[in-house]
Image (cartoon, rainbow, N blue to C red; front, side, top):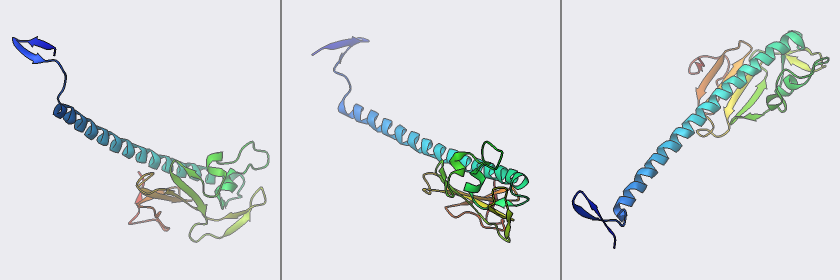
Length: 180
């Protein structure tokens, strides 16, 4: 057995005792759990920010469609917003949002449909039916893991939120809150 002389006393150099090792492992476990919880909260927050930005992108695309191809009306679906109008090299939405009617992006499912008090409009530049209003939503795919709030917007351009997986309904107002 090896011994080490430290400040006039002999000490055994075999290392940590089992109790000391257990205490270190418990402390590391606690720090790991705190780190994982913080990471999951940050991921959820990032997904929610991406959902809000996705709805802002849809609003911008709808306004461009309204003035460019929609003849004063709005697209009835995300696929219509993603379709190239004649003479353009791309649609009004990127492929990740405009490729299907219910795309999933950053843990949120998006959708566009006719808004409250909306009616069918004229045919657009592609010969597709339009709507006089629209209602777009972003709903978390797994509540609590991918997001804790659902979002909605319409042709007025404001984005509203509600906790949970049910988006705010039109006309917007309490209990829904405006996203700042």
